[in-house]
Amino acid sequence: MQLNFTFDTVMDSLGPNLTLLGSKDDFRQLAQVVTDLTDAGRPHHFELNNLPFVDPTPGARVVFASKPNANKLGIIEGRVLLFELDARYWERLFKFFVFMSWDRRTYHLNSDDASLADLELHQQCHFICSSEYPHLSKALQE
Image (cartoon, rainbow, N blue to C red):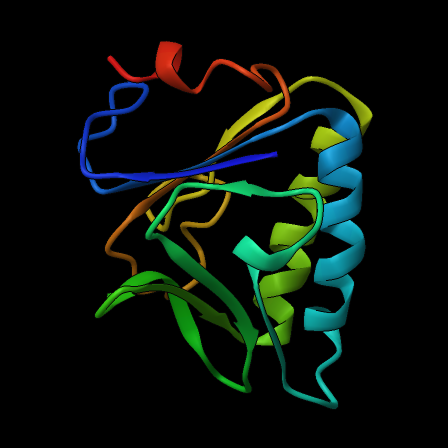
């Protein structure tokens, strides 16, 4: 899975943008890791860059964390891009990672998109995930 953070335009989304581009198997593995974030009984976090199946952009640290009542979907804090969400929000994102493991799909997981618009999320970075284009990170930037 390619993790790319850029301030450039990607798929018609002005920067900053975080893209996760991978195979169906990459998204299956990501969904398995994210299940720990859906446990409301215990806060949990991990750095996406450190997962064995992720090929990160140098210099970009992406942290996924679960915390009660949190609603940060891609907030830039210094040199860290933070996704700190309540467990129930992680359950919603988990579904999309599973969908991408079943079939080649692309999702714009943003606070103003229909799939997440009913949640009160704070976001500073577009979040684009695709199992359609696992190795075409440069081709997606237009």
